[in-house]
Length: 63
Image (cartoon, rainbow, N blue to C red; front, side, top):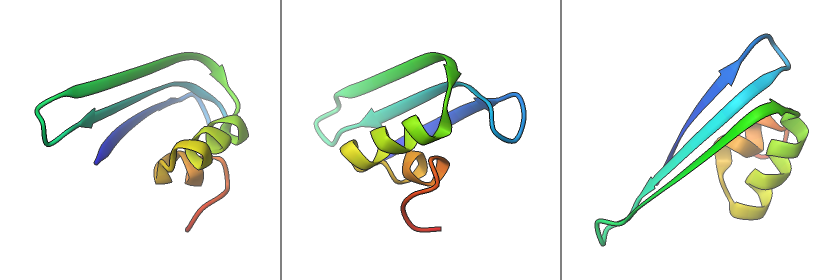
């Protein structure tokens, strides 16, 4: 199950995203994205990789 952390400056701006995934086989994946990120682009990534919090950030997925 992925865990996410979002760094925001305001209601629409996202400065960075960190996603961590810990597998049952004791392997971990860390993804750190830094920059001025558009929520709709993060939503597209969420759709592609089935990450619900990113889908919601982009306005898609279940609310």
